[in-house]
Amino acid sequence: MATFEQTVEYEPGKWMTFLVGPESPDWVPFADISPHLVNSIMTTEDSGFFKHHGFISSEFRSALQQNLQRGYFRLGASSITMQMVKNVLLSREKTLSRKLQEMFLTWYVEHHLTKERIMEIYFNVIEFGPGIYGIGRAARHYFGKSAKELEPQEAAWFSSILPNPKKRYVQFCHANGMLDAKWDAYIKRIMRRMHERGRLTDEEFAQATATPLKFSRAEAMPERECMAMVKRITTPPQQLAQSK
Image (cartoon, rainbow, N blue to C red; front, side, top):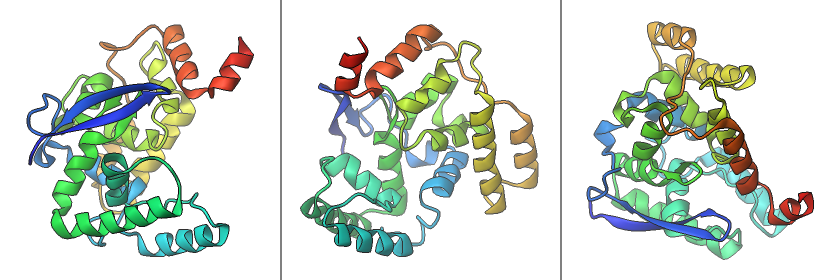
């Protein structure tokens, strides 16, 4: 795979560029991504990824009908392929022409790349927190380990923060390195769905639910500073100005 540059707006008005591909120190090949992470993301985002051709048929038809009735696009019903296309190839605007582009590019990508390659690019470009893009960087930041070493509860964490990883970063802000009770229950629900769908064995599920998720604090900032940062980057500018 050829390395390419990805440019993102990581905060309102602030942009950064990073490499995606083997030339990047953060690049993680599909073979080095934990199967638990693949299974977790499929459970929450796109259960039939390896079976469909880019579109989640029933959800997409329903969303398309509602969007056409409205005359604009609000509902995504996005497969992993569609999410990858949106992140890598398209702008963030929600218009009919852009949605048509997304549909064509999704079809094109599905016919020219393997499922493993699509998933590989997806995991290496999506946002996992403030300025944190790609699973290689994210696994080190949150857990101090490689993407290949991620355990089921750690994989479920990454599923739980999509599609709003900036706002949900507050869970990482806690000085004790632990989730609050509500989010811990959410992580367990994700793992329960994984188990019900045969993506965790009985033994894996029992061990994962009995093992509390704990973050590495090596890259963590002080709790108060972290909370303030999340508020600053997730609050609309006008609201932020009014609160001062």
